[in-house]
Image (tube, rainbow, N blue to C red; front, top):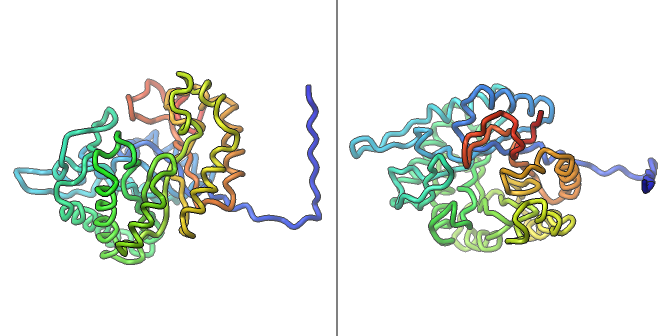
Length: 333
Protein backbone atom coordinates (compact mmCIF):
# COMPACT_ATOMS: atom_id res chain seq x y z
CA UNK A 1 0.00 0.00 0.00
CA UNK A 2 1.36 3.42 -0.94
CA UNK A 3 2.10 5.66 2.04
CA UNK A 4 0.95 9.30 1.95
CA UNK A 5 2.38 11.86 4.38
CA UNK A 6 0.62 15.06 5.44
CA UNK A 7 2.13 17.95 7.36
CA UNK A 8 0.66 21.10 8.92
CA UNK A 9 2.37 24.26 10.16
CA UNK A 10 0.25 25.43 13.08
CA UNK A 11 2.13 28.73 13.17
CA UNK A 12 0.74 29.78 9.75
CA UNK A 13 -2.03 32.36 9.54
CA UNK A 14 -5.47 30.80 9.52
CA UNK A 15 -7.82 31.18 6.54
CA UNK A 16 -11.58 31.55 6.87
CA UNK A 17 -13.72 28.70 5.58
CA UNK A 18 -17.29 29.97 5.09
CA UNK A 19 -19.78 27.12 5.06
CA UNK A 20 -21.27 28.15 1.72
CA UNK A 21 -22.48 24.57 1.13
CA UNK A 22 -24.90 25.02 4.03
CA UNK A 23 -26.69 27.93 2.33
CA UNK A 24 -28.94 25.82 0.05
CA UNK A 25 -29.90 22.20 -0.46
CA UNK A 26 -31.95 20.85 -3.37
CA UNK A 27 -35.16 18.92 -2.89
CA UNK A 28 -37.04 17.67 -5.95
CA UNK A 29 -40.37 19.40 -6.52
CA UNK A 30 -42.80 21.39 -4.44
CA UNK A 31 -45.65 18.93 -3.59
CA UNK A 32 -43.14 16.57 -1.97
CA UNK A 33 -42.54 19.25 0.67
CA UNK A 34 -46.07 18.59 1.96
CA UNK A 35 -45.14 14.98 2.87
CA UNK A 36 -44.33 14.03 6.47
CA UNK A 37 -41.38 11.78 5.49
CA UNK A 38 -39.83 14.53 3.31
CA UNK A 39 -40.22 16.98 6.17
CA UNK A 40 -38.63 14.61 8.68
CA UNK A 41 -35.60 14.05 6.45
CA UNK A 42 -35.15 17.79 5.87
CA UNK A 43 -35.42 18.47 9.60
CA UNK A 44 -32.68 15.90 10.19
CA UNK A 45 -30.46 17.46 7.52
CA UNK A 46 -30.97 20.93 8.95
CA UNK A 47 -30.21 19.84 12.50
CA UNK A 48 -27.13 17.77 11.63
CA UNK A 49 -25.70 19.66 8.64
CA UNK A 50 -26.95 23.21 9.10
CA UNK A 51 -28.71 23.80 5.76
CA UNK A 52 -30.48 27.18 5.74
CA UNK A 53 -32.50 27.30 2.49
CA UNK A 54 -34.07 24.67 0.27
CA UNK A 55 -34.99 24.88 -3.42
CA UNK A 56 -37.47 22.84 -5.44
CA UNK A 57 -39.22 22.84 -8.83
CA UNK A 58 -42.83 23.51 -9.65
CA UNK A 59 -44.09 25.98 -7.05
CA UNK A 60 -46.33 27.56 -9.71
CA UNK A 61 -47.39 24.33 -11.44
CA UNK A 62 -51.06 23.34 -11.47
CA UNK A 63 -50.65 20.51 -8.95
CA UNK A 64 -49.87 23.18 -6.34
CA UNK A 65 -53.11 24.99 -7.21
CA UNK A 66 -51.32 28.35 -7.36
CA UNK A 67 -53.15 29.65 -10.45
CA UNK A 68 -56.13 27.93 -12.06
CA UNK A 69 -58.69 28.82 -14.69
CA UNK A 70 -62.24 28.27 -13.52
CA UNK A 71 -64.93 29.13 -16.06
CA UNK A 72 -62.66 31.65 -17.79
CA UNK A 73 -61.77 33.32 -14.51
CA UNK A 74 -58.28 33.10 -12.99
CA UNK A 75 -58.22 31.86 -9.42
CA UNK A 76 -55.19 32.32 -7.15
CA UNK A 77 -54.37 30.13 -4.17
CA UNK A 78 -51.18 30.28 -2.10
CA UNK A 79 -52.43 27.82 0.52
CA UNK A 80 -50.10 24.94 -0.40
CA UNK A 81 -47.15 27.28 -0.90
CA UNK A 82 -47.80 28.75 2.54
CA UNK A 83 -47.88 25.29 4.13
CA UNK A 84 -44.37 24.66 2.79
CA UNK A 85 -43.04 28.03 3.92
CA UNK A 86 -44.64 27.62 7.35
CA UNK A 87 -42.87 24.29 7.80
CA UNK A 88 -39.49 25.62 6.65
CA UNK A 89 -39.68 28.57 9.01
CA UNK A 90 -40.79 26.32 11.87
CA UNK A 91 -37.54 24.33 11.67
CA UNK A 92 -35.30 27.38 11.16
CA UNK A 93 -35.01 27.21 7.36
CA UNK A 94 -36.12 29.42 4.47
CA UNK A 95 -37.15 28.89 0.83
CA UNK A 96 -34.87 29.56 -2.11
CA UNK A 97 -37.84 30.22 -4.38
CA UNK A 98 -37.55 28.79 -7.88
CA UNK A 99 -40.33 30.50 -9.85
CA UNK A 100 -41.50 27.65 -12.09
CA UNK A 101 -43.23 26.20 -14.03
CA UNK A 102 -45.89 27.83 -16.20
CA UNK A 103 -49.50 27.54 -15.01
CA UNK A 104 -51.56 25.97 -17.79
CA UNK A 105 -54.08 28.81 -17.61
CA UNK A 106 -51.57 31.32 -18.99
CA UNK A 107 -49.31 29.01 -21.06
CA UNK A 108 -48.71 29.16 -24.81
CA UNK A 109 -48.42 25.42 -25.34
CA UNK A 110 -48.72 21.91 -23.97
CA UNK A 111 -45.13 20.67 -23.78
CA UNK A 112 -44.27 19.24 -20.38
CA UNK A 113 -41.33 17.81 -18.50
CA UNK A 114 -41.17 15.03 -15.88
CA UNK A 115 -43.85 12.51 -15.09
CA UNK A 116 -45.86 15.11 -13.18
CA UNK A 117 -46.35 17.16 -16.34
CA UNK A 118 -44.73 20.52 -15.61
CA UNK A 119 -45.57 23.00 -18.39
CA UNK A 120 -42.37 24.47 -19.89
CA UNK A 121 -43.81 26.92 -22.43
CA UNK A 122 -43.67 30.73 -22.25
CA UNK A 123 -46.57 32.82 -20.99
CA UNK A 124 -49.24 33.82 -23.49
CA UNK A 125 -49.73 37.01 -21.49
CA UNK A 126 -46.67 38.29 -19.63
CA UNK A 127 -48.80 40.83 -17.80
CA UNK A 128 -50.77 37.95 -16.25
CA UNK A 129 -47.51 36.21 -15.31
CA UNK A 130 -46.27 39.43 -13.67
CA UNK A 131 -49.59 39.77 -11.85
CA UNK A 132 -49.18 36.25 -10.43
CA UNK A 133 -45.63 36.96 -9.26
CA UNK A 134 -46.65 40.28 -7.74
CA UNK A 135 -49.59 38.73 -5.89
CA UNK A 136 -47.40 35.93 -4.54
CA UNK A 137 -44.64 38.27 -3.33
CA UNK A 138 -47.17 40.69 -1.81
CA UNK A 139 -48.96 37.85 -0.04
CA UNK A 140 -45.74 36.54 1.49
CA UNK A 141 -44.62 39.99 2.64
CA UNK A 142 -48.00 40.49 4.29
CA UNK A 143 -47.93 37.02 5.85
CA UNK A 144 -44.33 36.82 7.02
CA UNK A 145 -43.11 40.44 7.05
CA UNK A 146 -40.55 42.15 4.84
CA UNK A 147 -37.70 41.50 7.28
CA UNK A 148 -38.25 37.78 6.76
CA UNK A 149 -38.98 37.67 3.04
CA UNK A 150 -36.04 39.91 2.14
CA UNK A 151 -33.79 37.10 3.38
CA UNK A 152 -35.30 34.71 0.80
CA UNK A 153 -34.13 34.38 -2.80
CA UNK A 154 -36.35 34.51 -5.90
CA UNK A 155 -34.82 32.61 -8.83
CA UNK A 156 -36.50 32.84 -12.22
CA UNK A 157 -37.24 29.44 -13.82
CA UNK A 158 -35.03 26.35 -14.11
CA UNK A 159 -32.48 25.64 -16.86
CA UNK A 160 -34.08 27.72 -19.65
CA UNK A 161 -31.08 26.96 -21.88
CA UNK A 162 -32.28 23.35 -22.20
CA UNK A 163 -35.12 22.49 -24.57
CA UNK A 164 -36.55 20.11 -21.99
CA UNK A 165 -37.27 23.00 -19.62
CA UNK A 166 -38.07 25.97 -21.89
CA UNK A 167 -39.56 25.95 -25.36
CA UNK A 168 -38.89 29.64 -25.88
CA UNK A 169 -35.72 31.39 -27.03
CA UNK A 170 -33.08 33.07 -24.93
CA UNK A 171 -34.81 36.39 -25.69
CA UNK A 172 -38.09 34.91 -24.45
CA UNK A 173 -36.44 33.94 -21.18
CA UNK A 174 -34.97 37.41 -20.77
CA UNK A 175 -38.48 38.82 -21.30
CA UNK A 176 -39.82 36.44 -18.63
CA UNK A 177 -37.02 37.50 -16.30
CA UNK A 178 -37.69 41.21 -16.88
CA UNK A 179 -41.40 40.92 -16.10
CA UNK A 180 -40.62 38.77 -13.04
CA UNK A 181 -37.90 40.97 -11.59
CA UNK A 182 -39.91 44.14 -12.08
CA UNK A 183 -42.97 42.60 -10.46
CA UNK A 184 -40.94 41.53 -7.42
CA UNK A 185 -39.20 44.87 -7.04
CA UNK A 186 -42.52 46.71 -7.29
CA UNK A 187 -43.59 44.87 -4.13
CA UNK A 188 -40.42 45.87 -2.28
CA UNK A 189 -37.01 46.76 -3.69
CA UNK A 190 -35.33 44.82 -0.87
CA UNK A 191 -36.56 41.47 -2.22
CA UNK A 192 -33.74 39.51 -3.91
CA UNK A 193 -34.21 38.27 -7.46
CA UNK A 194 -31.76 36.62 -9.84
CA UNK A 195 -31.05 34.14 -12.64
CA UNK A 196 -30.51 32.82 -15.23
CA UNK A 197 -30.69 29.43 -13.43
CA UNK A 198 -29.04 27.76 -16.41
CA UNK A 199 -27.50 24.34 -16.82
CA UNK A 200 -23.78 24.01 -17.46
CA UNK A 201 -22.74 27.57 -16.46
CA UNK A 202 -24.32 29.07 -19.59
CA UNK A 203 -25.84 32.47 -20.50
CA UNK A 204 -24.09 34.35 -17.66
CA UNK A 205 -22.51 37.04 -19.85
CA UNK A 206 -25.58 37.40 -22.07
CA UNK A 207 -27.85 37.61 -19.02
CA UNK A 208 -25.83 40.36 -17.37
CA UNK A 209 -25.49 42.26 -20.65
CA UNK A 210 -29.27 42.17 -21.02
CA UNK A 211 -29.89 43.32 -17.43
CA UNK A 212 -27.42 46.19 -17.72
CA UNK A 213 -28.66 47.32 -21.13
CA UNK A 214 -32.34 47.09 -20.17
CA UNK A 215 -31.92 48.40 -16.60
CA UNK A 216 -33.37 45.20 -15.15
CA UNK A 217 -32.38 44.31 -11.56
CA UNK A 218 -30.31 41.18 -10.88
CA UNK A 219 -29.25 40.75 -7.26
CA UNK A 220 -27.45 37.47 -7.79
CA UNK A 221 -26.31 34.98 -10.42
CA UNK A 222 -27.46 31.36 -10.33
CA UNK A 223 -26.49 28.40 -12.48
CA UNK A 224 -25.89 24.64 -12.32
CA UNK A 225 -23.15 22.18 -13.19
CA UNK A 226 -22.30 18.49 -13.03
CA UNK A 227 -18.92 16.96 -13.93
CA UNK A 228 -20.58 14.94 -16.71
CA UNK A 229 -22.04 18.03 -18.45
CA UNK A 230 -19.31 18.33 -21.07
CA UNK A 231 -18.89 14.63 -21.86
CA UNK A 232 -21.68 14.19 -24.38
CA UNK A 233 -22.07 10.54 -25.33
CA UNK A 234 -18.80 9.13 -23.99
CA UNK A 235 -19.89 5.76 -22.67
CA UNK A 236 -23.40 4.69 -21.83
CA UNK A 237 -23.08 4.71 -18.06
CA UNK A 238 -22.02 7.33 -15.57
CA UNK A 239 -19.06 5.34 -14.33
CA UNK A 240 -17.57 5.36 -17.83
CA UNK A 241 -18.29 9.07 -18.21
CA UNK A 242 -16.69 9.94 -14.88
CA UNK A 243 -13.60 7.96 -15.83
CA UNK A 244 -13.18 10.38 -18.76
CA UNK A 245 -13.98 13.55 -16.81
CA UNK A 246 -11.29 16.10 -16.02
CA UNK A 247 -10.06 16.29 -12.44
CA UNK A 248 -11.37 19.39 -10.60
CA UNK A 249 -13.43 20.42 -13.62
CA UNK A 250 -16.13 21.88 -11.36
CA UNK A 251 -13.56 24.20 -9.78
CA UNK A 252 -12.42 25.41 -13.21
CA UNK A 253 -15.98 26.07 -14.29
CA UNK A 254 -16.76 27.86 -11.02
CA UNK A 255 -13.65 30.03 -11.44
CA UNK A 256 -14.73 31.05 -14.94
CA UNK A 257 -18.32 31.70 -13.87
CA UNK A 258 -17.09 33.73 -10.88
CA UNK A 259 -15.17 35.94 -13.31
CA UNK A 260 -18.22 36.34 -15.52
CA UNK A 261 -20.50 37.26 -12.59
CA UNK A 262 -19.07 40.82 -12.43
CA UNK A 263 -18.92 40.88 -8.66
CA UNK A 264 -22.47 39.69 -8.07
CA UNK A 265 -23.10 36.90 -5.54
CA UNK A 266 -22.89 33.51 -7.25
CA UNK A 267 -25.15 30.61 -6.29
CA UNK A 268 -24.89 27.14 -7.77
CA UNK A 269 -28.42 25.92 -7.18
CA UNK A 270 -27.72 22.39 -8.47
CA UNK A 271 -24.65 20.19 -8.49
CA UNK A 272 -23.80 16.54 -7.84
CA UNK A 273 -21.30 13.92 -8.97
CA UNK A 274 -23.52 13.34 -12.01
CA UNK A 275 -26.90 14.41 -13.40
CA UNK A 276 -28.15 10.83 -13.79
CA UNK A 277 -30.84 10.07 -11.15
CA UNK A 278 -30.26 6.32 -11.62
CA UNK A 279 -26.51 6.52 -11.02
CA UNK A 280 -25.57 3.87 -8.43
CA UNK A 281 -22.43 5.85 -7.56
CA UNK A 282 -24.51 8.42 -5.67
CA UNK A 283 -24.54 6.19 -2.60
CA UNK A 284 -20.96 4.89 -2.80
CA UNK A 285 -17.75 6.25 -1.22
CA UNK A 286 -16.77 7.84 -4.54
CA UNK A 287 -19.47 10.49 -4.24
CA UNK A 288 -18.67 11.19 -0.59
CA UNK A 289 -15.09 12.00 -1.60
CA UNK A 290 -16.27 14.09 -4.55
CA UNK A 291 -18.55 16.14 -2.29
CA UNK A 292 -15.80 17.05 0.18
CA UNK A 293 -13.17 17.74 -2.48
CA UNK A 294 -15.53 19.85 -4.61
CA UNK A 295 -16.74 21.92 -1.67
CA UNK A 296 -13.20 22.71 -0.58
CA UNK A 297 -12.26 23.77 -4.10
CA UNK A 298 -15.21 26.18 -4.38
CA UNK A 299 -14.00 28.33 -1.46
CA UNK A 300 -13.88 32.00 -2.35
CA UNK A 301 -15.86 31.50 -5.57
CA UNK A 302 -19.47 31.06 -4.47
CA UNK A 303 -21.93 32.27 -1.86
CA UNK A 304 -24.05 29.12 -2.07
CA UNK A 305 -23.37 25.63 -3.42
CA UNK A 306 -26.51 23.51 -3.44
CA UNK A 307 -26.14 19.73 -3.59
CA UNK A 308 -28.94 18.12 -5.61
CA UNK A 309 -30.66 16.71 -3.50
CA UNK A 310 -30.96 16.01 0.22
CA UNK A 311 -33.48 13.15 -0.21
CA UNK A 312 -34.25 10.13 -2.39
CA UNK A 313 -37.96 10.98 -2.05
CA UNK A 314 -37.78 12.34 -5.57
CA UNK A 315 -40.09 11.78 -8.53
CA UNK A 316 -38.95 13.49 -11.71
CA UNK A 317 -39.23 10.27 -13.72
CA UNK A 318 -41.29 8.11 -11.33
CA UNK A 319 -42.02 7.71 -7.64
CA UNK A 320 -39.41 5.36 -6.13
CA UNK A 321 -40.47 2.17 -4.42
CA UNK A 322 -38.46 2.89 -1.26
CA UNK A 323 -37.24 5.95 0.64
CA UNK A 324 -33.60 5.00 -0.06
CA UNK A 325 -32.85 3.61 -3.52
CA UNK A 326 -29.48 5.07 -4.48
CA UNK A 327 -30.83 8.23 -6.09
CA UNK A 328 -29.62 11.83 -5.87
CA UNK A 329 -30.29 12.08 -2.13
CA UNK A 330 -27.55 12.99 0.32
CA UNK A 331 -29.24 10.83 2.96
CA UNK A 332 -28.57 7.09 2.75
CA UNK A 333 -29.29 4.04 4.88
